Length: 500
Ligand SMILES: [Zn+2]
Image (cartoon, rainbow, N blue to C red; front, side, top):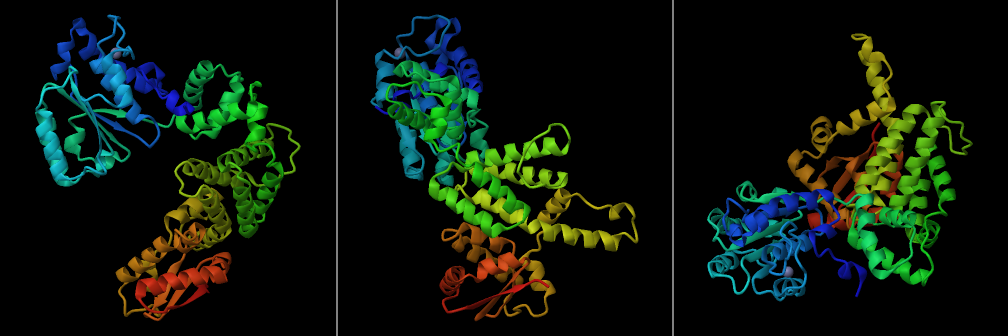
C-alpha cells in the first residue's frame, strides 16, 4: 500500500495541524465524553450538528471528517478522558473501509441539484442503521445550486437529533453566509515544515526507515505543505536508498537540488542586465531539467539576503554576484518573495518566476517615468521632487497600469466603431484564450493596451520594446491571429506599436 494511504490520519493525534487537533478536541469533547454519556451528542446545545471544513485541496479535510465520524460513533473506547476512536470496533472499521451505512460521503459536484438534496432530506429523517449518529460528509459543498443550498439550509435549521453534517469546501466564499453561520468552522491551512516532519515521523517509525531529521526537513521543503506529496517523496527515497540511511545530502542529490549554482549566478547577472530574454531561456532550461522552481526561488532569495548583508556592511562575503543597489535588492526580494508564495498554486510552476522577471525588467521604464513625473511636480512641491525608491515607484506604477479604457478614450485614432467596454471585453477574451497556449504571452498582453480595432485590423500598444518583440515573434503572432479569428469570425491583421 502506498505510504500516504497507509498513513492517512486515523485519529485526531495523527493530524498535521496542532490548531486543528486542539480545536477538534475542544469541540468534540463536550458531546462525546461529558459525564460519559453518549446521548449528549444528540442535544445540539451540547454538540454541534454541522461543521464546515475549509481550505485548499490535499490538506486532509475528508480524512478529518471520517475521524470525526469515528469519534462520534466509536463504541470500543475504554478511556473516560480521551476521545480518540479505538480503531477496532465495528463502527470504526466500517468507517475506515467506507462500508458504514450511517456515514454518507456525498460529492457536492455530482449531486448538486435540488432533487438530490430533497432526497437526502427525506432519508435524513430515518433513524441510523446501527450507529448512534448518522454522519453526512458533503465534499465540495460550494458546488451545490442555490436551490440545493436552500433545501440544505432548511435541514440545517432544524436538524434531526441523530444527524451530524460535515461540509467540506475549497472555496468557502461560495458557500452562503446563512449556511456558514450554522456551522462550526474549521480552517485547514498549508502545513508548516515542522508539522510535516511530525507526520513523516509516523511513517519513518511505522516502516522502520532510517532517516536523519535534516533529511525529513529537506523532504518537507519539497512537499509544498502537502502531506500527500511529502509521503510520495519519502516512499520514493525509501526505494532508492534500498535500506541505507536517508541523509539530507541524499535527498538533495536525488532531487537535483544542489547543482543549480551556475544557473543561479547567471540568473542574477541577467537580472542585473535586465535581459529578460536570457532569463526566460534559463527558466525554460530549469523546467526541462526538472529542477524544483520553488527551491530555485528560495536560493535566489537566500542570495539576495547575502547581498543585502554585504551591502549593509554586516558581513564580508566573497560573492561573484553582480553589484545591486540597496533599493534594487529590496525590490527584487519583494518580487521574488511574492513569486515564491504564488508558486504553490500556479497552473504552470514557472509562471510566477517569469512574471517576476517581466515586472523587474519593465521596472527601469517605470522608474524613469516616475522621475519625469516628480520633475514636473517639483515646481509646486519640493518634497515630491525627492527621488523615489525603485520599489515605491514600481508598486505605484503597478497599481496605476493604464487600462484599455483609458487608451480608447484618450487616443483619437482608436477604433471608435466599438465602444470602450466592448474593446475591453475583447482584450480580456483574447488574453484569457492566449493563456492555455502561452502564459508568458498572456502576461505580456496584460501590460499592453488596444490602440485601435476596426474589425479588420487590431493595433496593440506595447510600453516596452521587449514586449513588442515578444508579441511580434512569428509563433506568438500566429497564436494571436488564430484566436482573433476565432473571436471575431474573420481574419484580423494584428500589429504592435511601441508607446512613444
Ligand atoms: Zn471504535
